[in-house]
Image 1 (tube, rainbow, N blue to C red):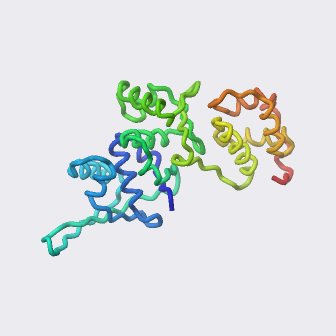
Image 2: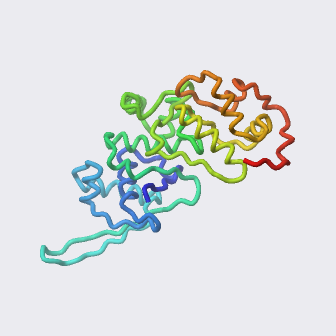
Image 3: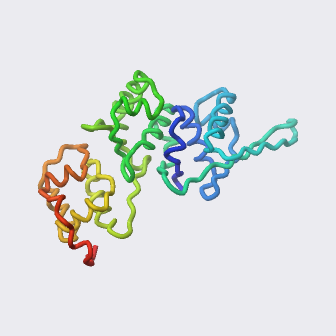
Length: 267
């Protein structure tokens, strides 16, 4: 499969180089088992870190954070003498994860920025590529100095990998940094609206049940009605479409009681 799951909370605390080494290790693991037999030399080539002892230090950090659960080292003998191979058993999260496509390995992006983008993705609101943190908060959460963060952000914005929002930042590539939209219950309405917003280059709101049902009630259960109303609005490119913002421009009373929640809509 073309993606791997990254545990949001466990990944925070890594630096950019460690985060990218971790992703390379993940990308070279089995999709189902998260077991990897990748060589240090291969990781060195993928990360661009020439000295394998630095890769080994990164792996020790990953083990200390339980991102690598176990490292099994085996010794073999062959025509060229005795050599070691390692098997890595990686942590596979069941909750609180983000998905990153393995195409990131081959993307034309500096490797350190790849690691930074992975970490920024871990700060994004659920089901979005938007993080509402300011620079001070990002520095604190990622353990970065302000000059380092400024350098990363400037490089990513110049490369159009990040878009600056009014109250935060958004990752622009939804192929590499996948937005997960669930498809059950009242999610078909939400998913349809979110896909429309993304197609327009807008940041969709994080899922919130009460807000969603008020929109469903207001638009008689039809996402098409809501989209038709949005089509009439001149929303600035890259705008963060939080529920309060959508309610304001669509004149939806978010204090009204969604009586229709108990009814059955065909979505």
